[in-house]
Length: 232
Ligand code: APR
Image (tube, rainbow, N blue to C red):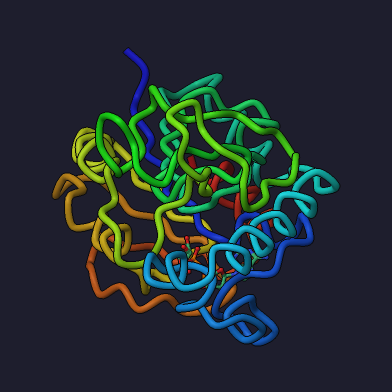
């Protein structure tokens, strides 16, 4: 049986694909007010602003490509049973060939009705793949209500956190790439790692996780993944 690797990724894994992270200097949350464009209150205050913000990111994603770190993570599947738990809403892991991905915070290329028939947390039955198309005010779902980004906004539940906890708690190795680990519940996932499971963190900065199991590979994602694979 193959060993299991759980990989938690954040904005840092896509930084070398040209995507700004959120909290670094020059990051997205310096340019935009997170409460305006990425919170549930912001959505109801000004839907157009939120739709435009995600239309812009979708356009950027269309032009972007996976980098060597996404490919290296996908290549782990040759020898390991891998699940990628990503906080990113881009599709660069899919495009690099990863086949088992949990999108904790939703997906840029998808939308859904703001009020669902089944529930409001994003039942997969109502999710619509729009690819890289723009979505504007007046674009409606089959149930007649406005389409919204299939994104977990601040102030909303994270429906896939339980699936992610299961994956982390069963993993032989836990790898974290490019996340400041400031946003919960994703930031607390490492606490579910088995006591004997090593935890690797790849990040050019010190990430404040105080756990004896952690090995910090202090580097950017592409170089850090090379080092991680050598270490395996
Ligand atoms: N390679 C690896 N890591 C990098 C790189 C790089 N080239 N460049 C920056 N980083 C690191 C930063 O040092 C930082 O620790 O990536 C991390 C990015 O942190 P954040 O910007 O906070 O992004 P993330 O942790 O993914 O944010 C979590 O916050 O706003 C929300 O919903 C959004 O999913 C996101 C969540």
